[in-house]
Image (cartoon, rainbow over the protein chains, first blue to last red):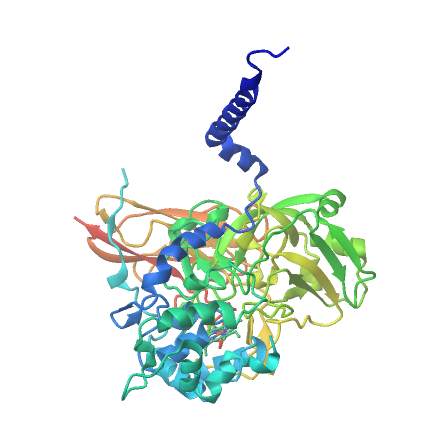
Length: 162
Length: 439
């Protein structure tokens, strides 16, 4: 004895399942954040935060130079740039380089320190070019015992005290 | 892959840079110049290969920070962190908090500064994370799971200030190498965990113990799997203080990944580098701990004062064992303009590794006169203290508000940079903000 609806059954089951899935999705959208927050474990690392911007930054921007600065690394674009970029961004970002200022001797000491303690290799023939680039473009400036506040850089705003 | 066929990229470059260029990137110098880098596409190839493939090879945790971004100077948000943080370096991650984002009584987790020396561990599994205590001066070697640490020992919550030893490095002249921290490598949070001394006593500390050192699960940025990134510590007396914690919570939440999740040490009053993150091992030493960044010039200052720019031999450098008295104006943000009839409310934080801050003063005339601020007591030792004041300005014009904290021993912050030291530590010069008063 076959019920007339028997052949509909698989379809109904599928429909029911889809409705359940939909309800779950809606529920998740509504309260998912709170439920997740209850567990409150930081994601080991939110990689997407990096990837999103990386994807856009990747292709076209890599070669861009603006006002003499290689935009992607922040390094000054001048003779020796390619070797410095190639060598000095292998472990850390170029930001560690561009933040710092030193004489040729000071830069040489930093390189020796990285070679002795941080696994930096012998730079061979390139060392001279690297040091010249660094000493020329990232040289110390005389600022005295305490510099003025950088008044040019201050963004003035009206303080709302009402 | 046959090793002899594969030459390291640096080897190739050392031998002949131009030939290496040709071989690796199919890149040739333009005629009459040596500027091979102008050739279209070469940079792309080079950055991708150099940054991601050749150097880090198989060791490097893939996808930690994409190669395309690793050398980037573009602003971007750090995972779990406030977008207002200033990123000094994105590999390894180092970011500081602007003063106006430190106005909360306790620094929220997403605003707490980050000073990473290496790459944080990925895929932390709480059920398998363990802490091992060993060393010459440990009575035994003992390993605890996280659950055991939480069950066995009495939990405590303390407000503890952490400040990077190099906070303020940016101002030293001649410049000191390293991340150029301005004012924001500091924060104060409520840390929940257990007392380090309870755990040390459970293991047993021999009478010859001198120092305690830590090891964490972060990995070296060079990709060398077995290279310890940083392993510092504190003298045994400091380890035994009631405020020295092994913590798993920060402001009632798990510690952020970038700040040491799931387990870290917290030693208030010491350079924050002593407070090991991603903590997996503690060694009880019968000598001063000698892990990476304990020795040489790292986190050390000249034992005797030196003139700016002096080269100081390693053996004349002494370990920093306390952060100096310091303060920060957290409201308003520098650059405020107001009317002369208005009083300016200021707020800030003051902290010290000594007993406590006893007064904070402000000056609007570059130190010619000082007025006292209202100062709140600390919640516990090593917590920062809040101060506030209302300031009236005598006439219109440009002003700087300077704040100066003084501790219980009468030691105050200098207005100029304190003693120059080769690595640029311990700058506790007064903080100042710019104000314009209009009619």
